[in-house]
Length: 93
Image 1 (cartoon, rainbow, N blue to C red):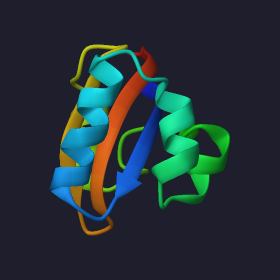
Image 2: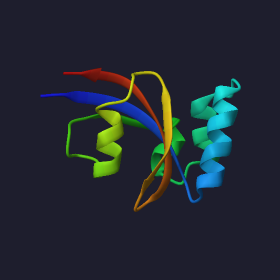
Image 3: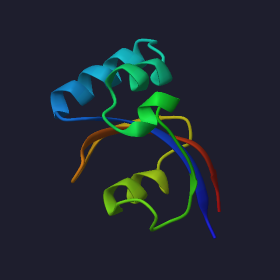
């Protein structure tokens, strides 16, 4: 079964999500921004979510994690929790 590891930053607004994505594209550290801005408890760990399989995260999250190129920052991804920036750090099929 497929497995993935990912990290994310969760914020309330699409605008903030886009702003953080631009900062990362301009060279800002993903983990540092997660610690500073993420509203998920994973923010304390730089946004690390650990390893998981399909169906363990919300559908919108799963679709990105199991299709996006590893190592690229994806988002904003809207879920019932807010807006996410996602980076797949590892994936096995």
